[in-house]
Image 1 (cartoon, rainbow, N blue to C red):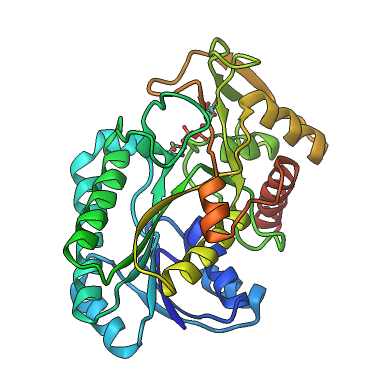
Image 2: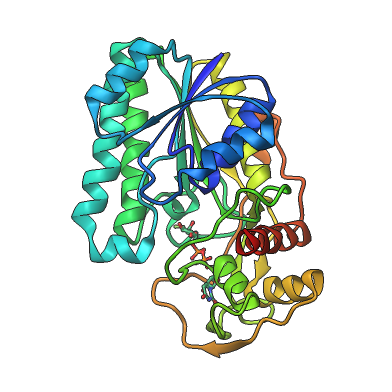
Length: 334
Ligand code: UFG
């Protein structure tokens, strides 16, 4: 079976390519390196000992998509490519809508033309907005608070409309909670060049001395220790969820959304303290004001993915903290 992975050199995409290759899928990747580095390609090959085809370019480029589908008989697509920074999306909404929606429309049109109607889409728990209760189930109402989230929800709507128009489609919408961690080899992981927006990359940069002090955004939330609670999931577990989703859509028709989370919530301080314990390093932090737009707590009910896809997260926050640090130490030694 041949799977096209858009954004296959990114954080989640690269780990998913490894899992696909390990499971003996043929893999074809398209990426423009807008938020990744080209050396990831060789690292995926090194980890898996397997080769795959790579096309450098933009998913908005229909002529390139046409070439890829003409040169390869694609059975299914995993669509990761897209901009993903919440703050940047507020500052540059047109760039976000243009890129994320345009690329998806180009991809879906091309898939339709080539009769490839199986896709797993990278969505996000951001589509739940401020959830009415916890844990979050897939049938909760959907709303968004920033352009990035709106692009995810719009694409979900496009996919649902597409299925209504043509019941031959098989579509898995995968709603990620908070992916962190890295591959155990230490070769691939998350290492943003800019000052990170997300918690784990920031913790790591404080631990390595690149940044001085972590700001903990608020300790007056309605949570056990007052700091924000999230459902952190190891990126390798998340990647394995995509393999289960591909197996499912290859053998079914329909459109369905699945939460990919662990079902456990950890606070900012839980994560900071576990990181320090597991890695034996200090992470200096201070409590600051809340970050606008943040919610108290967010964690999944992952039972639908367990019952229908046969997938469950297995790794804990100790693994996530250890692997995230191991990766960045490795990068610095390179
Ligand atoms: N936090 C800090 N200090 C930081 C960064 C984050 O205290 O420097 C806190 C936040 O306030 C929050 C928690 O750490 O309580 C997690 O924050 P992240 O930025 O790591 O993650 P979010 O839950 O805000 O965002 C993530 C994804 C988004 C997605 C969103 C909702 O990064 O893409 O979940 O699903 F939209």
